[in-house]
Amino acid sequence: MLPIKPFKPALLIIFGLLAAFRCSENAPTPLPPETIVYEESFEDFPNPERGFYHYSETRASSYSPLNATTVANYRSPRQVSGANYQVVSTLVFRYFILDSFKNSELSASFLSNVAQDFNTARTAGAKIIVRFTYTVTATAGSCAEGFICPPYGDASKAIVLQHIQQLAPVLTQHADVIACVQMGFIGTWGEQYYTDYFGDASQNDQGKLLDANWQDRFEVLKALLDGTPKSMMVQVRYPQLKQRFIYGVTAPVTSAALTEAEALSGSDKARIGFHNDCFLASFDDFGTYEDYGNSTSPRTTANFTLRSYFSADSKYVVVGGETCSDGYSPQNDCEPAGKAIKEMSDMHYTYLNTNYNNQVNNDWQTGGCMDEIKRRLGYRLVLRKATLPSQAKTVAPLPVSIEIENVGFAAPYTSRPVELVLINQTTGVVSKQTFTTEPRLWQPGSIVLTETLVAPANPGEWDYYLNLPDNNTALATRTEYSIRLGNENVWQPTSGFNKLNHTLKVE
Image (cartoon, rainbow, N blue to C red; front, top):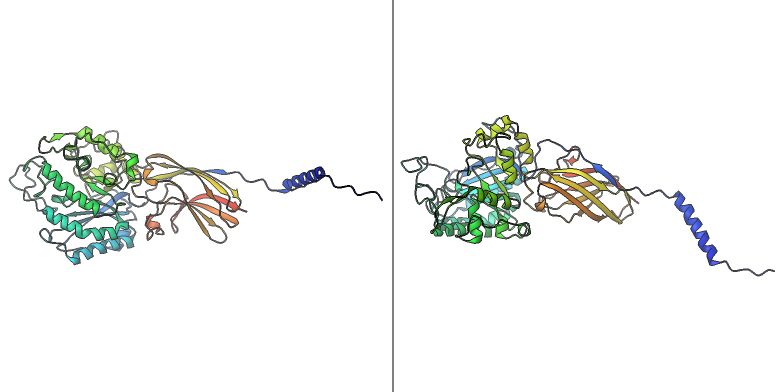
């Protein structure tokens, strides 16, 4: 018998390679990632925390609560009295007029009513822009300014600080449905100008602000900042107030604006935004961009310098307001005769009032730029393209790239997660993963989300979605509070997700 010869290792390798080759011949070729291009929508639709707001007011002496049905209906096109255009809205401006508490603490019933208004907004799927004031009445008389004369009817600093202390727990408890708080409290309309107690800068009295006047205003602003969560922004009427609050009563109008590095810090500087209640009403928006002096310096114009500051600072804080006069026409009209779009873009406007002043607003409709304004107030996030894997092994790396363009006037001003959502077509199982990104830094222009995530652990076919829900747990599943992207055929109204129109096969 011949001896059995051992099998050569080299032959084992050859046979193994041949077997692997035969298997690879039968294996399917992995599908490459696919790039999907999306169609932009020019529809005006509601999105949280931006756009035209509806005005409301209530007096402490005769409280008129918000109505949930009325507020919910603002999400559908509405045309207010005096307007020649319609808007959809997720914002309500709420004037709380403290007319019966100018010399006393707030009552428990009033605080309860305020809280109930926030509950109503939550039920309706809206958010509230909040301002407290003691008077909205201008009494004419024989004084320098004529149409409004002292006494104006606001409250002392001691009363204001007491009221802020009482309101702080309510504002904190309901921070989820508060878009922002305006400083208010001081002066007629809460605009910090015509005031009996904080220095009357009008021609009816001293014509500027003294050091003590600035310090008193700082105390009110600081109390409001300290009494509200760090996630909430507080708006001031005049940009110089922010400068001097941050840098002191002698701070020049050339003081530095907020930077990107400071913007997400939760500091006072990062939390102070602006409301301009005379947008494009005059050369300097009726004193918005003015140096109000101090004890040793005069009041002077500072229009161009403060506009430059406002433009830079407003990239990272919330800006809104209303028009108050059509006297600056045609400058406040649509381009090319006016500069309405450019001004909103330069100053990063997020919201405006649909109730006032419609002499100006109506001109935007007849001038042909209202549709653009409605779309671009605040953020407007448009999907441009996405490169997404079509096939993956379970729990394998999942490299994704999504390109978005913010065609709005401003970045979102509240933090929210950005989630890639995968939904199994058969089982309905949902897989969510969060991108490492900060929407508050999504300035107008291109945003690219490029990240390697992880494929689901279960095999099957999974549809891709993008989700930008509210950051508050109680509102995270409410579709009214999720951001809808500005595209055709992506919005899912029942889930609040944006469909990316691609499928992942997991093996």
